[in-house]
Amino acid sequence: MSSSGAGLALESWEAFLAAHRELFRIFSEEDGVWTEVSMKEYDVLYTLARAEEPLRLCDLSDGVLLSQPALSRMVDRLIDRGLLSKAADPEDGRATRLSLTRRGATLQRQIGWSHGKSIYQELRTRLNSEEQRELKRICEKLVAPLAEESEEEGEDS
Image 1: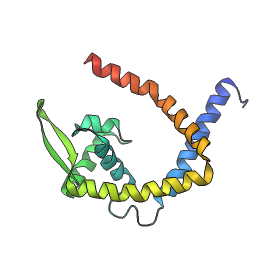
Image 2: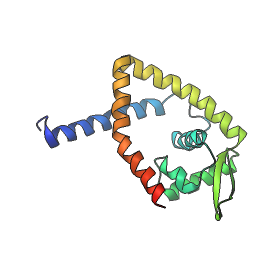
Image 3: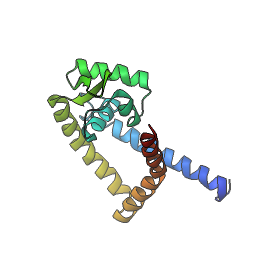
Image 4: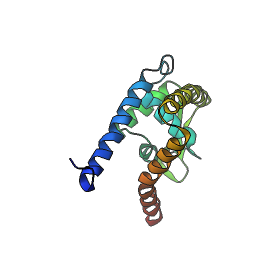
C-alpha cells in the first residue's frame, strides 16, 4: 500500500490502533492497580470524577467505551459496591443522575495516581516531550470535530 491518500490514512489508523492495543495490554497488566475495579469500571469512575455535576446514564455512555446495556449493568454493580450513588434528576422525574460516593471518589483518585504514574513511565520511555505534545495535538485535532458536533446537537435540543 502506498503512503499517500487512502493508503496513508489506513496505515495511520492501523498504527494508532496497534499503539492503543499495546499500551492497553501493558496498562491492563499493571500489578496492584486493578485489584478493586477493572479498567472498564475505572473508566466509569474517571468519567464521573471529571464531570462538573452528576450525569444521566446517556451522558455517561458518551464518555465511556461500553454499550448502554453493558454500562447500565456495570453501574448497578458499582452502586451495589458503594462506589456510585443514584439520585432523581431534578429536571426530569423519569431519569436519574449518577455520581461518585465518597468511597468511589477516593478509590478513583488512588487508582488514578497509580495508573497515571504508569502512563507517564510508558510514554516518557517511548516519546520525548516534543513528541508527547505532538501526540496530544493530533489526538485533540481528531476529536475536535466530534466535540463540536456534540455541542451543536445539544444546542438543537
